[in-house]
Image (cartoon, rainbow, N blue to C red; front, top):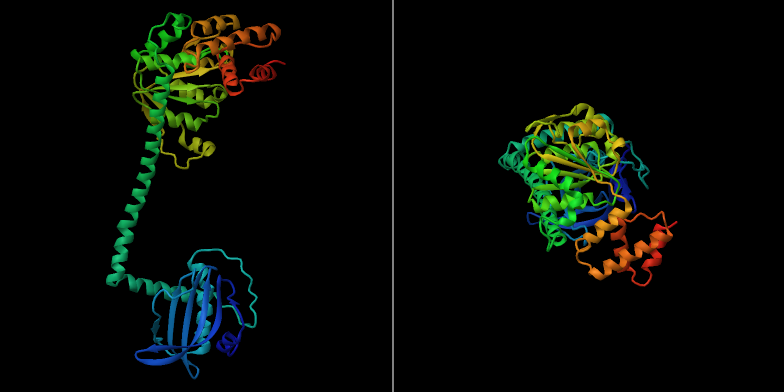
Amino acid sequence: MSKNLYSKLKQSKGWIKIPNSTVRIKYLGKRELVVKKRSYSFDTFMIEVDGNKYGRLYVYVEGKEVKLVGAEWLNKKTLKRNKSVVVTKPKKHATTDEFAKLILLYAAVLPKIKKRILKESADLPNLQFDNPSDDEKQGFLDRLALKIIEFMQTPKGQVITIFTAYLIPLMVILVFYWKTFALWLAEKKAQVVESQIDKEIFKGQSKHKPALEEYADLIDAIETLTTSDHLNGVLVYGRPGTGKSYVVRRTLYFNKVKHVTFKGATMTLRDVIHILYKYNSGYVIVFDDFDTILKDEDVVNILKAAADSYKKRIITFPQAQFASTQGSSGWLVPERFVFTSKVILITNKQKKDIPKALLSRFYPVRIDFTSEKIVKIIEKLIDYVAPNVERKVKLEVLSFLKDVQKKCPSLEIDFRTFEAAIDLKLAKPDRWQQAFKEIYCE
């Protein structure tokens, strides 16, 4: 440590950066402070920590000894004093250079106390000194730890101990349950909205409709699934746009079955297991658009277990292997759990592309009509498709599709195409026909 360090601190102009820290110090000059009715002339320093916290350090020197030390933190926006200056006498007399070294030592270990990795330049304007050694830093930390232990044994420290031991964990628990409650509330809101959508879609309809006779096998399979202990899974397959999802949703609605529906387009094994565990009792779980994920052998095995012939089924999966491939962060599903709900899979795959293991566990229902047959079904169900759209608009759209199909043989009329054309007409009434041809005709 170079001599006259304290003098160099006072003589430096502007801010002095303390090496290996986020602390800067600047000498402000002399300031008169009254301590116990006596006025003292203090050397005043401004201290900056982390670039956003400021304070003043007051040092009263007689000869080369530090007699009094004061400090205060300042409001970081106004740099005005928050409270009166606290002035104390050092327990041991210290020379000015020893005191200056203590300032630099504290600044050097401050990052370690705060467990931060700092990358600061060690260049200081107008000041040269040796960095504190590792032993000096560790000694300071040891003394600080002893002071903390001594403080925790005082009445005030014991209060803090109780607060830390009981109140903080309680707050953590409250935060956790608040997040859980928020998720539960969001899910309940989604269920209410979904119920309102169902009421809107099926408004004015009754459970039995002759127009749905082409779907009699599917309706019968779903009703058997919801009433029998011997059938736990239904697999609905066939090309897209044939009304599979609509009929499943309608049948569950009119049979007042408690159910949840999930789209499987971007689903993973983790998602499937989580859903089966969360809704493991009292539900019919519908996996719609369940196509790509059927290539996953682990998913197939899990679904086989879910649709087994027993009333109570055990779903098991190797959690260690699962965690290595899917990740286990936030995972609260046990390796084995009881499952009593029912499952409906809806896929656009053909029978030859569906794993045989699923066909042996799930009751398969094929929904696959020709384009001409679908047109006839749409004509029967014209009042139920897009129920909020006027009938004459839907008839106009269907007539247009028939005309386009004659000139564009590649066009396949189905429920999806029909609803897409209706949406185009409502969105672009002036050029919806041209827009449709550009999209669907080569």
